[in-house]
Length: 58
Ligand SMILES: [Zn+2]
Image 1 (cartoon, rainbow, N blue to C red):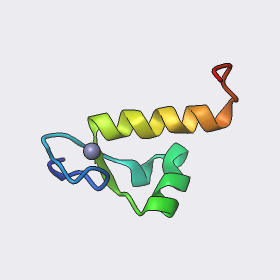
Image 2 (image 1 turned 60 degrees about the vertical axis):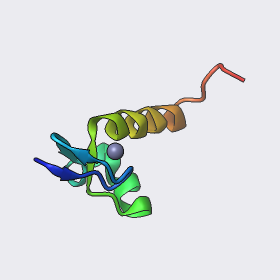
Image 3 (image 1 turned 90 degrees about the horizontal axis):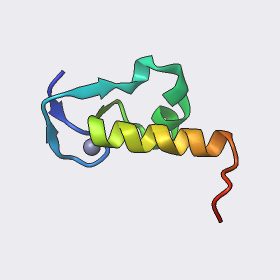
Image 4 (image 1 turned 135 degrees about the vertical axis):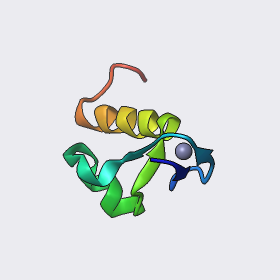
């Protein structure tokens, strides 16, 4: 899938349709993102992981 990332508005050759991923349900609902680029996908995914388990970092 090609187009513009809903998160950073950059053109991307590969977009991820996060509406199909149940892990991203909250992100889709909160930010209204539907397709995001690889970098944003990684960022959002990391954010989700961070929310799930409290990190040891300060
Ligand atoms: Zn992006």
